[in-house]
Length: 111
Image (cartoon, rainbow, N blue to C red):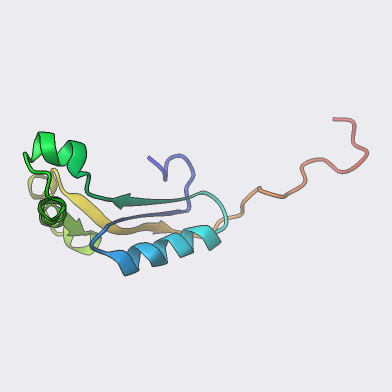
């Protein structure tokens, strides 16, 4: 969805991949144009309690890990095997001209 909206940097990580998430955030902040970084994190208050029937954050971290797959591995899975999984990794990182800070009209134009 973000790529369709024009994003030139998109990645997703979970809280078990701290170093990768930090690197992705730094990359997104320095990347020109629209960037999106999604961090999948545990929520024992709602999801854990009502869906997994556990308020233990460690149970949720394990569930997220069990239901995550790296992008390079996801490409090898069938659609059925990939269903319901969080695909982690860097989805797109391209350079393209951006229009922030550019001048559309010259000074003095009466447009």
